[in-house]
Amino acid sequence: MDKGLARLKSALSGKWMKSTAVHESEKLAEVASYAVSRMILSYMRNRYLTNKFAVAEAKLAHSFFEKEGDGALGTISEELGISVKKENQSDRFVTIHGVNGILFVPLPAYLKFSPRSIDYKLVNRSVSNGFVSVNPHERRRLMEEAVRKKAGEIPQLRGGVPDSIKKAAENLKSDLPKIEPQSTVTFKEGDNPPCMEKLLESLKKHENLNHQSRWALAVYLTARGMSVEQIVSLYSNLPDFNEKITKYQVEHIKKRGYSVPSCATLLSYGICCADCRIGSPLNWKGKVWGAV
Image (cartoon, rainbow, N blue to C red; front, side):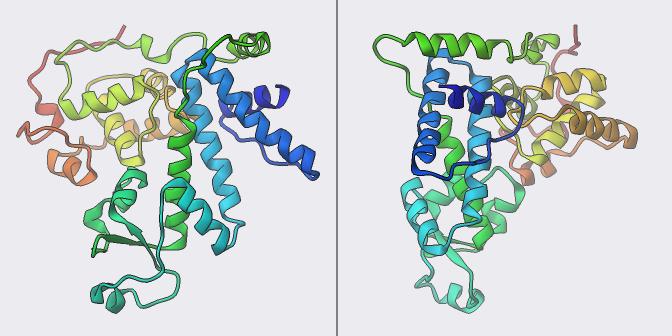
């Protein structure tokens, strides 16, 4: 129980617990602490905490993946739902990727577990015969994302909740943000174009955003007159939020005076989600919004 609680507190701080287990009993205790952490999360039903936990567990898993050999990684990939092949029957792949280290992931698994980054968009990948080519680093990144999704799926506790779980949850509440960050800013319906509204909704749900989405949203909010402090407060919903880094980046955006990316650019980033035909998010004809 103590290890499970420490695991969650470490995740809240934006870190992950490094393994110090040597003996078999210690390794079993670490495995058990993962199960206990999930029981506490199931009882608390706090999406912010759950997402922080999922990100931390994914980072921890990735640190292990980097130390594993091909055999172990292959087994783990299969368990995570990512079957990987070293060869593809497509002549095109044999011609273009006839080098060591290239792996082939089935398209459905790739789409399910690829990070929301422009580098992983299919338009920027080699796709043939139902497979996507990836290098070993990208395979581990897909596996990390699969762990994040799996760790974030917390079933509801059935039956009575042990007192030890309730006590641990009470202990953990003191480490949670006292005020929900998004409560400092209000948005009225229709204030923002669908693409920006979707990103804002993801923030409110404590979902992770890729670099392009974070940058585009910050530039947009800055152009609409939101202060650095308000944007940083809003971004504190992110599972991997770092106040110092976020403030520096937002201040940099404001200082450089970046132009809000056009709809065509947002489309290339995979951010566009509606056929608005307005050219730029700033051309949205919704009501003017403000912050309180």
